[in-house]
Amino acid sequence: MKVDEREIAAALGAGSSAAGRAACPEPEALARLAAGELAEGGREELLTHVSSCAPCARELQALAPMASWLEAQRARRARPAVWRVALPLAASLLLALSGVLLLRSGPRTARPALRGPSRPAPRVVPGDGVSLPAAPEALSWPSSTEAVSYRVTLFHPDGTTLWQSPVSPIAEVRLPDDVKARLSGVVYWRYLSRSPADEASSPVFRFTVQR
Image 1 (cartoon, rainbow, N blue to C red):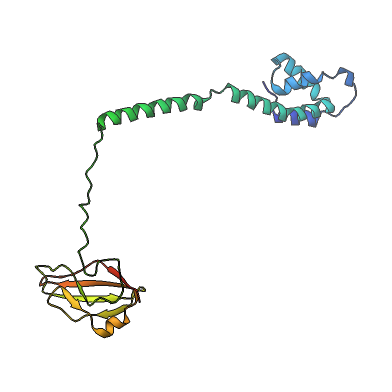
Image 2 (cartoon, rainbow, N blue to C red):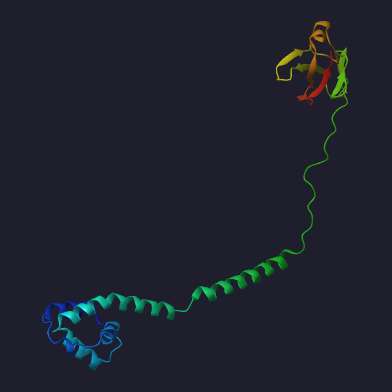
């Protein structure tokens, strides 16, 4: 049994003589006493000596922390490395579970696209993106059977309004001369279709006037 701190304290309190060191035990014996490696008879004999020998009591006190550390190391090495067993087991269970889920789900099939086919932009005059040597005389676009009127808006490249047409009953708007005189560079435009039910805006189109 390992010697405890109370026994060491009692030995320090009782041990006052430093004479007769020739009769003192070997340091190995004190180390075995501190580590609890002595049989009961040898342990009691050494404790009796230490209780009357201050130098041996101090040596025993110095050895006690090291003995505690060694005991903790032995206990740690004696414990089974649980994680070394648990980790491979957990990996095996995970693989088995994934196999079961794969069998239940069956082969995957490609899902159809949720979006329908893209609608082509309406054909407009002048064509979207064209370059012109002069401003166009008019803007036109496909008519809608539901629309009762249209209105065109021209925009500067920065998004500000350049001109807005009066309401037109047909899918065409002629540009006034003063508006044509101001058209230069990139011009954006779109038309608004009005029906009895609602209003619909076209995509934004673009043409370039090269002056």
